[in-house]
Length: 420
Image 1: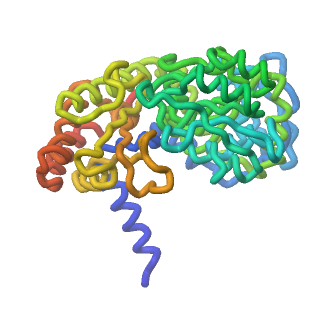
Image 2: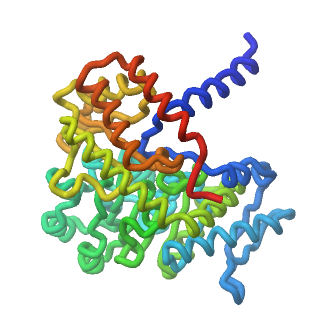
Image 3: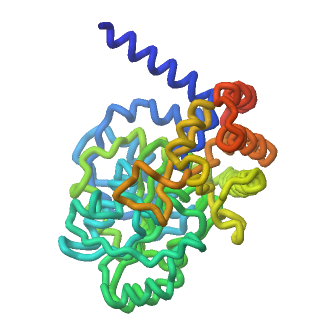
């Protein structure tokens, strides 16, 4: 078998198919041509292991490298760090982690030791798997304790959770998650963290682009000690990770990142992330504002069509995400698979009331609008998208027939906006 030819064909088929889809996975995005160029540059092949050694008079990070040939990546990485610190009002930034999970591991490794406790959301309540014992937190021996979660508000129950925290005294209080409709209570839990000697780590993976655009919350200003994130969800960069923190944690974070957890840190990701940050500095507010407008418009339209969209009483969402309980129309798996036949790509998702031991039977679906926003869709298109979803999930229309309408809509939105 000619695997080479088959692989080239798979690449072509993937690009053709997904360019004709409504790509609404909440953890995905596409990059601009400028970011893509940076990502596929010569930096992809190079190494620049080394240590951070302080800033110059203009505030740019300096490096002590163990390799030669790094004079250009030194400047690019310094720009990435400075942009992070400016955009997110961070005292210190580290762009070494190569994924969001590695960013979380970096924070865990720096701030806790084996056997310490970490407070987090359960997976059905929206916690990311890396926050739990089955993944990154468990790898370094952290013991997971769950916040009390208010299913009606889709957020942490602050008063009930405060009582739990005072009793359990975790070393790390983790905020942020995979389902994140509304800002998390950083300010409200800061005093409790101080009382028990815990560090607040805020996982901004899903909402980093919204934070950059000033449309969500400001975790570091509100009291988070460390902000971890991936760089490719609402933040339209390459896949990778970043950690930002207060200055007092800088050395521990830097040492955990390198040499603790990463050797070479994928230089093409660093320079591409820097380009994405520069784009967000210029276009981020418009982009983030449109994302929130689109998510609210989609949620409202779905609600009017008869879908059980969560949190109607709160305007459904303040992020890029819309969460729908589809348990009465087949469940998350059935609906997500039917949507895929129609070229509508979303994911099935556990709801807070679902059994985590049976992830194959989720009640809900999670929808993200950031990629559709990135290619220029606005509120009117969100209403069309909601109509397509109704035709498939509620009306029982043949998904292949709906697919024709999806492709017709998508062909007018092929170019990336809000970018250089």
